[in-house]
Length: 162
Ligand code: ZN
Image (cartoon, rainbow, N blue to C red; front, side):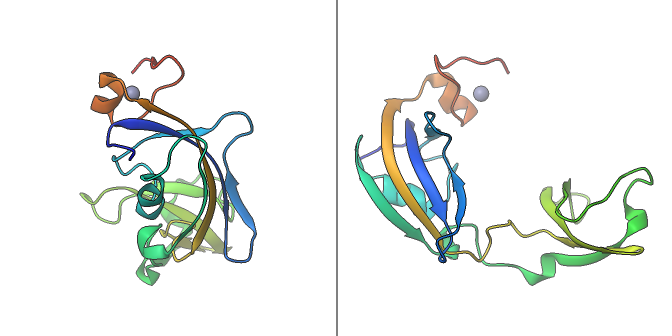
């Protein structure tokens, strides 16, 4: 069993239900995360838990254990003037904003621009998607105390400055 506080390196490919590739780990450099800290979607974290180095698995993650269902109320139309006058807006551009003064910031994507109106979407791009992961565990190691206190993985050697 992989325990909370271990660093897991995964080689993975992520595809949608039609088999279209959405993401993959870099060639020669597995993706590392700190297990038990909610750094990866819960459905994937749960599936990895029982694996050991060298194991391969196909994992299907439904939206509720992935990036959530789409929330249509996060699709909004705002005025061009809500952006700084010198900003160049393009479809597909992303920006961070809070809906109210004290709510946490979320990432919005510009989905359309029509004259003075801009359509934006605050859903995660993969919200509502069933995710298909092909994974292989490349490495499991204990996290350093520093990594645990930061809640994330540091680079090779376990050092970086912040
Ligand atoms: Zn750190």
